Structures are given as structure tokens and as C-alpha cells.
Length: 125
Image (cartoon, rainbow, N blue to C red; front, side, top):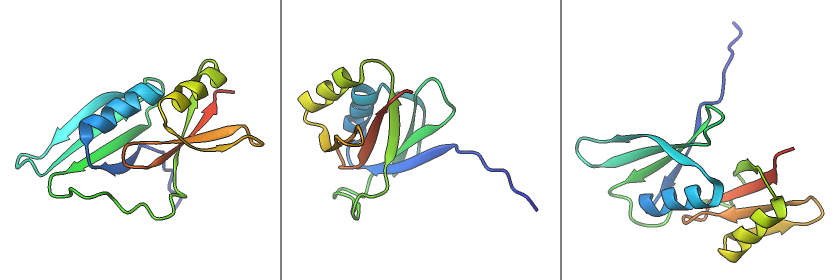
């Protein structure tokens, strides 16, 4: 049997849903495309999209989880390609204090979100 899979979404858990939605919108232009709320208020799922691909980022907020999430060594990461002047975007991210790592020899950098998840930022080629 051959199975053909396709990417649908990537999930991260967040401690402050509104702060995370604002960060992803302001830093990367991602917009809320749908939301699911538990009838008992125990969780909220918000899906963010780029308006181009069908792939989405799922932000999960859990009512009973108030402490920071353990992210290990932060080696797993999301990568976003940005359109426009890459250097200008990098300076915008730097001005906001979001850059957490730069690799000048490879021409890339990472920003971290409010829960300290790392996002690799690359230019559209």
C-alpha cells in the first residue's frame, strides 16, 4: 500500500492566545482563518494562514495550562519565507526585539514568539 500524505497544519501551544495572534500577524502577516472553541471553555484552537498556501499554523490555548511550555532545546522550528526587502524586514524584527539568533554566513535568522518558539525567516527566492 502506498500512502500519499500532504501537509495540513502545524500545532504549537500558547499561554496567551491574543498576544500570540498579534505577534504572528505583526511579525509575519499571518491571519486567523478559523477558530474552534470548546463548549466548556477548556480550550481554544486558532488556525492562522498566509493567504497563499493551504498550510496553517494551529495555536492551541488550554485554560488549565498557565505555566510556560517546556520547549526542549528548541531545535524543531517553523520556517517562513517573507516577500519584500529581506534586510528591511530583518531590521523591523530587530527593532521589535524578536531576533533570537542570526547566522550571517548562511544568510538567515530566527525570531522567537511570545512563548519562545523559534521561527526561521528566509526570503522568497
